[in-house]
Amino acid sequence: MIDIHSEKIKKSIEEKGYLDLPLDPTLDLFLEIEKLKKEKNAVILAHYYQEPDIQDVADYIGDSLGLAQNAATTNADIIVFAGVHFMAETAKILNPLKKVLLPDLNAGCSLSDSAPPLLFKVFKDKYPNHKVITYINCSAGMKALSDIICTSSNAQKIVESLPLSQPIIFAPDKNLGAYINKQTGRNMLLWNGSCMVHEIFSLEKIIKLKIRHPKAKFIAHPECEEAVLAVADYIGSTTGLLKFSHTDTSQEFIVATEAGILHQMQKANPTKTFIPAPPNNSCACNDCPYMKLNTLEKLYLCLKYETPEITMEEGLRLAAKKPIDQMLDISTRYNL
Ligand code: 13P
Ligand code: SF4
Image (tube, rainbow, N blue to C red; front, side, top):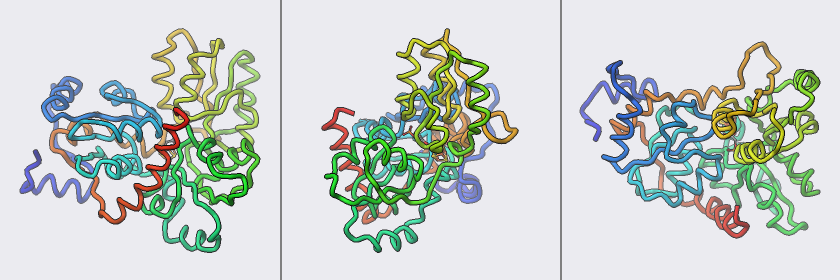
């Protein structure tokens, strides 16, 4: 339990957004985290984009839908969310009585930042007949302005759950929205947001890579731009990409999503080759700078001292919960 009188702890959270205390370098953090989890009845939920060490100590690793479903049903008293802020916020919305911790409060999301609720409300008010379907990568304030939440795993089914005659606003990811428009033949109004990681891929370099690896399948996340998706052999959420790379008989895959997913792909398929799709700059990696703010050290300290914690005003929580519940209901109905 955190010592609330500890000025050092308060100062670190206020100034840095995470705990920055000296750690004994001889500590086996994997072992210590296991001990703390049992002692505190805590669960670690991690997104596939987390660093490999964090994925290896997690109780559950998944995509945004799997994580939300898991957060909705866990019996743990403490949820340590190894992911970004909107994911931990979703866990808190679903579990008001549980302690939800995020190792680094600065772990935001460029896509979530591209949709400030106040601006979105002005836009939405211009279209009173439209239903709002919002990608889970957004703030609680955005969720509270939405009718249904979706993730990349269930977006198509969620959109199709509304009658064809129903006009829809889709926010905040314009790339996912355009992809779903194409898949469903709808003409949803799209908010102009995007993810900095999925927009960085170079079509030219991908095409060159495909020529050098003619047997490789090119697989991509629907947050990528339309031109990149147009040359993909398979398009899917992180879980979809992982499943496809496992079941498909190809031995080589070029992967256009955040590089953290390669850890599970390689673990599940040790004989297959996974090549990260090249970005359009000289940097060698497609790491999400927000996801990668979490480290094993921060995770250990956050579980030990039970901070930083996600808190939320109850009115906002209830308003944001409604569209998430809608999504979870539809996902259960379709067995997603
Ligand atoms: P999924 O987890 O739905 O694949 O989304 C990827 C993502 O960008 C999460 O931040
Ligand atoms: Fe946000 Fe993109 Fe990072 Fe996912 S990968 S957390 S969408 S910035």
